[in-house]
Image 1 (spheres, rainbow, N blue to C red):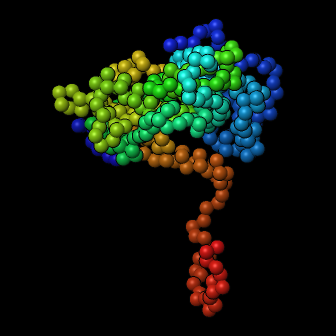
Image 2 (cartoon, rainbow, N blue to C red):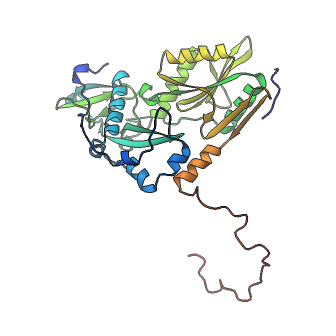
Length: 349
């Protein structure tokens, strides 16, 4: 794109963390690229063997995760986030209304690779497959911004010379307020008395209604800042001054692009920070697999997916495959088959 630049609560005393496990030898740490202040480059990660990646990533149970200090720290971080946001409250199991289910939970462990950096993430997930429609949840649909909307935002921002800032709302679903009553059994890693259960005040990952609840919570906050939702894309919101649009924001779950003049964008981010913990990423350079390159002097803004393609090559171990121009020998003339080799073949197979 090219344009000219003119234009209820849980008590602290009831909270305990998973136990510390000192002096653990973790095989995967031998395989991890060394980092001194900066993230390891993509080429260094690409040089790791498939076995090394498996050693880093393969954790499928809470008990197994407790063998690795990195996962213990990730579990603590998740439980602290739940505590800080008062996601649940303890109550007596006998007080759960008749007919209501008490749902189980599980821990999900993932390793994220971003520009060579390795981050261990632990997430407490509700077993939402046991929820019953009309009882444990009602509405579930939650949209995300369309690709065309994101492209239009970038094009318009470049045309007007606006700033395009990117933010990420941390632990987004834990901020979402629930309309329904949902009850949980004791999760692994959380200590509470026998005969107690947890009642959710806010959403957890895995709940069927969590994305819808988060979208409702977030858009209501934006509406208090003067934003209005677009009729053409529910994940596009704009703010106007005297009939002229001065700010645009696109929402993709917890990732947002905000376009406008620098002081207006800053005011919006500060307004969001009053309600949620936000990670300021800065100028939009990577968004949903897109790489964004902007040259203000020339008035250009380009998007491409080079890094996304490189990551796919790395994940499927095809980065070393040699490219050829044609799958066959150059100059071969097609020959007509004299025998019908498919004559006796059952094509249904």
